[in-house]
Image (cartoon, rainbow, N blue to C red):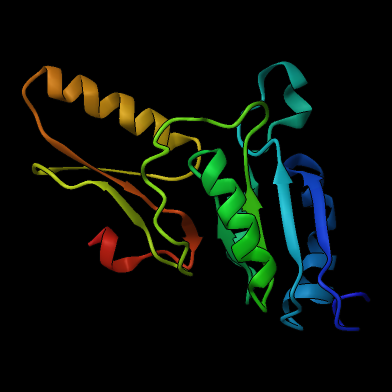
Length: 170
C-alpha cells in the first residue's frame, strides 16, 4: 500500500467503525511496522450519535497489537501537537479524540510531545489524578473540588496508553 511505498497515510475514521478493520490494522500495517496515522474521531461515549457509535473499545483492541502506539490529547492545542508528532513518527500510531469541539482549557500546559511520556500538569499533595484525553478536563474539575475540601492533588496527563509512562504511574 501507500505506506510500504514510502508515503504517510492518515486514516480518519470513527472509533466504532475502526474495529471492523482489525485484521487489516494488525496484518497489513502493524506487523509490518508501517508508518500509518489513525485519526480516531468520536472516541469514547458520543451521546446523540446513538448506541451503535459509542467508541469505547479502541483502547482495548488496539493495545494488544504489536508496534501500535496510542495517544489522546487533553485539548485542542495538544491535538495539533499530537498530529504533528504522529505524522513525524516512523511507526503506526492511533490518535483518538472525542466528538465535538475540543477543550480550550489548560492552554498554558503545552510541553513537547515525547513518545510514551506523560505530562505533569500539577505536582502537589498525596493524591494523584491520572487521566488521558478528554478526561484530563474532568481531573482538573476534581482537583478543584478536592482543593475546596482542603486536599491537594497532582494531575498527570498520561498522553499515551501505549507505551505508557511507567515512571509517571509509579
